[in-house]
Image (cartoon, rainbow, N blue to C red):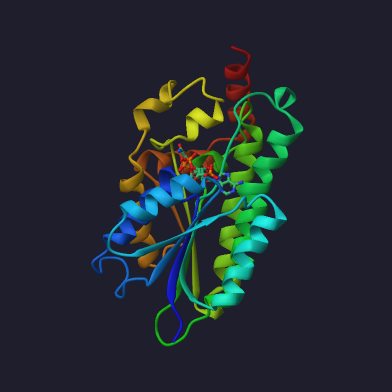
Length: 269
Ligand SMILES: NC(=O)c1ccc[n+]([C@@H]2O[C@H](COP(=O)([O-])OP(=O)(O)OC[C@H]3O[C@@H](n4cnc5c(N)ncnc54)[C@H](OP(=O)(O)O)[C@@H]3O)[C@@H](O)[C@H]2O)c1
C-alpha cells in the first residue's frame, strides 16, 4: 500500500512553514484523511529538522535540496521514483525576490530569481503530476504561491514581478491541462506577508515592509488557512486579502501607460 503524502517547498520558513503547521493540525477541515507524511523541502537542513521535531500530528520528512539546481530537482524526482507515494497535495512556496534596479543587480540574482520562482515551480509540477493522478473519488491539489506583484510590471522589483506573472499564467494553463488527470491547480496572490521575505529581498536593510504596504501586511497562517479553504472549494485563483482583489481589479481597469508613468515617478524619487 502506498503512502499518501503532501509536498511543501519553501518549508523552512514563512508561508511554506505555516502551511505545514496548519496541515499537521487539520482535523478534517481541509482534507478528510490526514496525510501519512509531509515532505518538507528547502535548502536549510537545520531549519527543516527543527520543524520536523516541533510539529506533532503528522510525520515530517525533511528533504534538503536547492531547487534552483538540476541536482536539487533530481533529488526530489529520485525520491518520488523510489518510494512511489500518492501525492495528494503539492504546495510550491519556495521563492525569492531582489529589490532594486535591474542594472544594479548581479547576473546571479536575476537568474536565481527566475530559476526558483519559475523553473523550479514548473519542474516540481512536472515531476509530481505522475504521482498525483486521481484514484477513486479524491482529486489531488496543487497550490502555487504567486503574488499580487504579478498583476503589474514593477520598476524597482522588475524580475520578481515578471516571475510572478509567469506563475499566474502557468498555473492557469496547468489548471486546464491537469484537470482530466484529477488534479486541481490553484494560484494564490497575496500582498505583503509577515515573513523573512522582505529582509532577504533587501539584503537585510529592511526587516519589515516600511512603505505604504506596511498597512496591508497579513499573517502567514491566516493566508494559509484562506488558501486551503479556497483550494478545497476548487478555486483556480485567489487574491488575498481583499485589498489585493481591488488591486487585481485596478490592474485590469487602469491603462498600463498611466500605471507605468506613476511607478516611474516613484522610482526616480
Ligand atoms: N512575504 C511576502 O510578502 C510575500 C508576498 C507575496 C508572495 N510571496 C511568496 O511567498 C513565497 C514564500 O515566501 P515567504 O514570504 O514565506 O518568504 P521566506 O520566509 O523567505 O521563504 C522562502 C522559502 O523559499 C525557500 N527557498 C528559497 N530559495 C530556494 C532554493 N533555491 N531551493 C529551495 N528552497 C528555496 C527558502 O528556504 P531556504 O532558504 O532554506 O532554501 C524558504 O523556505 C515566495 O514564493 C514568495 O515570492 C511572499
